[in-house]
Amino acid sequence: GIQVEQSPPDLILQEGANSTLRCNFSDSVNNLQWFHQNPWGQLINLFYIPSGTKQNGRLSATTVATERYSLLYISSSQTTDSGVYFCAVVLFQGAQKLVFGQGTRLTINP
Amino acid sequence: DAGVIQSPRHEVTEMGQEVTLRCKPISGHNSLFWYRQTMMRGLELLIYFNNNVPIDDSGMPEDRFSAKMPNASFSTLKIQPSEPRDSAVYFCASSSGVNTEAFFGQGTRLTVV
Image (cartoon, rainbow over all chains, first blue to last red; front, side, top):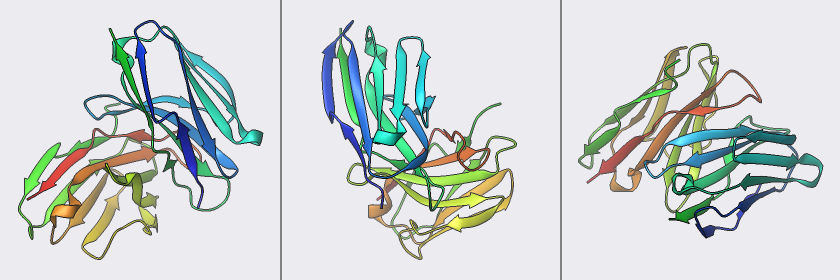
């Protein structure tokens, strides 16, 4: 099956720093989403981005489908950005289901 | 819209008991997904429905697990009998169709003692 690999697995930063999270996938995809799981366990939608670039405030994401990766950028980090960031993809062919990576755990220290 | 609604939020039960988790998808969405999250296996799909019909249940761990979607606004995931290894957070998600954005409920934290 498709492999979804996220890096780094853990990231610890000071408030105000910028970060880049990466998601690599092993096959062509129809759909790619980024989620933030906050410390209370909620999965919050960040981006639906099968290709191209999108921005929402301090966050932006870029997916290069032909090269099978996506990047999530967080600028001027705040402590509320802490949590686990997941990338999830739907294969181009086959079952229409979101397959998740293992996540990047981000800790922002004040 | 209130989003995807799951109940209960927390469930503690004894081994061998039946557990029923409930989900109300976003109105107008015709795809519904049940996921399970554990430390060891991360987020894994158990089953998904399209227009109330189960499409892929290959992720259902064993016969103790069953899921139904009697109508477009309600789904259940049942575990009978429950075992301690079923302890996890169970998420329900819905989307408006193939290759569209999926939205998750707040999850049900199940503890089987």
